[in-house]
Image (cartoon, rainbow, N blue to C red; front, side, top):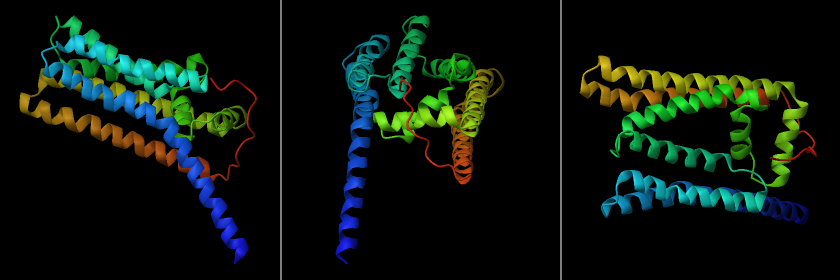
Length: 234
């Protein structure tokens, strides 16, 4: 009984330590990349600041988070970089529209650009899903990143899975952008609004389901954690 209590205590300590690490890793990202930009944008627009200027101003939050994350972890926060890119693309779209906030067209353009980024990312060494997977599937620690890097270097199945997932996400994003670009030309306005909500949700749900299924299939192969790699974690 004593041994069991000691073991349970150790397990609880490990769970608490992991939760703390995840909170430290994701807390600033959620705060600076989602909560503060959303609040700041609506506060600025509510006080009469033009949408374009508001988007540029709120992009300072994820930019600050990127700097803090790099200072702490010595690598880029992939999720924060995507949020910053989204805000800057939205601001550029508003400028192109003479300062008017054109959310629908900006969202379509951004979705298409994300799809292209997924498609071309393997050319630069590792596909985007590898970087996002390292961000979501680890606690953000150096040890977690090293383990993820080790899997990439030592497991061909792991690499193949990420190439397939990247292709799926690229196809999904490009498909959504294409549908949203064509719909206004061929569909009544009311149906466009409904499709604008349904199409991205359906494609995202399908792609996420495929991602989860692929991850479970890889895990079911009985993979054991790869030894931490000595390669840089960036």
